[in-house]
Image (cartoon, rainbow, N blue to C red):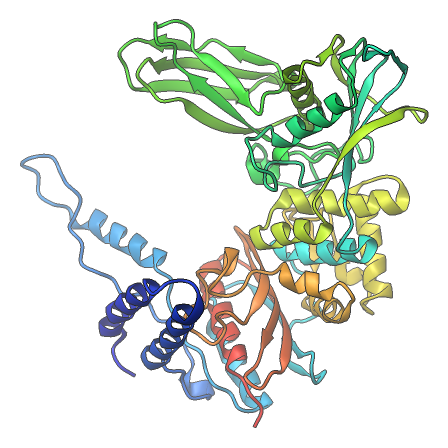
Length: 558
C-alpha cells in the first residue's frame, strides 16, 4: 500500500479541483465519479482476512511553527506539538475497510475490528440482513446499554406509528367571555400548547419572533382589538416536571437540555442582546424574541470610547434574568443565549408583545392556567408535518424535538404527556410490534440524554426492521443522516463505499458512542445494524464503527 503521507495532500488537491466543477448535472456526476476513483486508488480496500485488520490510520501531521513567544525567550516545542496534535485530530482519517466475500469472512473481519477498536469499555453490536433474514454478526446483542441519541429512533417510530407522517400539531388561541362589536374582549385570552416542537423560526422566514408574530396577525384578522383580561399560558398537556429524570446537573442551562413544556417557543432558548448608548448612558438590554413573560433586570452601563465589554448575564431566582457590567460605546452589540426557566410564560409573553405590535392591548397579566372547557377557539398555528419534524430531530439530533414528541404520544393515548407514560407505551410497542421482551427498552426521556436510558442492540435492530417494512418507513429512512454527505455524518466514512449509502442515527455523550441504521451491500442486500459502545475510549470506538460501516457497504456474497 503506498505511503499515505504522500498521497493525502494529492487527494485533498483533487477534491478542491473537482469541487469547482459545480454541484449539478454532468459536472456533479463527473465530480462523484472521479472522487470515487481517487478514493479507490489512494485508499485501496484491504483483502478480507483477520490478519489484515487494524485500527484506522493516523492522519498526516504537518510541520508547524511553534507559537510566538516574548522577545529574548527561546521557542518551546511542547506547545507546538500539542497544537499539531489538535490539528491532526481535526482532520478525519479515512477508515481502513475490507472487502469480505462471504458471511463468515465478514463476521471474522468485524470481530477483529471490534476487538482492536477500543482499549476499554463495553460493546454491544448486532448486524442483520433484512433481505435474507440472517444474523451476520453479534456481540452482546441482549445487553442493556446506554444508547445516547440513538434513542431518538425509538421516539421516531413510536410517534410515526401513533400519528402518521402527515400529522400536524397546533398551537391554539381561545377566549372566554364575550367579544363586543368594537373588538373588545371582556374575558381572558388563552394560548394552549399542543406539544409542537417546531414552533420557532426554523421553518419560517423571519426573526426569532416569527411564529408569534404570525399568530398575532391571525388574531388581528379576527377583529380582536382589546382584551380586558389576562393572557393565560396553558401547558397542561404535559406533566409539570420540566427536567427529565437522569439529566445530569452539568447539562442544565445548556441549549440541548432546555426545560420541557407543551407550550414552547424557539426550542426554549432566548437571546439576550446588549447594546451600548452612544452618549455613555445606560446600555439597552433586550430579549430576542421580545417577551414580557420574563422579568429582565438591567444595570449595564456604557463606557465611552471603549470597544470592549465586561458583562454578566445570568438567571436569578423566580425566572428573572439579570444583566450586569459594562459595554464600550464603540462596541458592537453583544448576544448571549440562555435557556428559559418557564417556557410557557416565555411563549405567552412573546405573544403579548407580538399582539401589541399589531395594536392589540392586553390589560391583564401573563400567567399560567388551563383553558376552560367552554372556551371558544379564536385561531391556531399548525406545525409542519410530523415527517419534517422527525427529519430535523434525527438529522441534527435536537433533544427538544424528541422530548416533546415522546410526551405527545403519551398525551394522545393517556391524556397526560409524561415521560413515565411515554416509557410505558414504548415498552408496550416493543412487545406488541417489535416482538421483543419489553424489558429490553427503558426510556427515562425521549432523546437519550438521560443516563438512565437503556436499550439492547437487539431491540434497536428489531425496531429498524419494523420501520423498514412499515407504511411510514420512507419517512423514517429519509430522516437519517447520510454517511459522508449530510448533517452529523457528513465528515464520517468519506471516500469509502459507505459514502452516500449508509444512513443512520448517531449517538454521543462523554461515555457513549453509538450508531444505528441501514447500509446496502454491493449486491443490493439491505443490512440493519446497531453499534453501542459504553466506555471512555469513545474516539477509537467511533473510528472502529466507521471502519465496520465502510466494510458492510463493501460486502457481497459470492
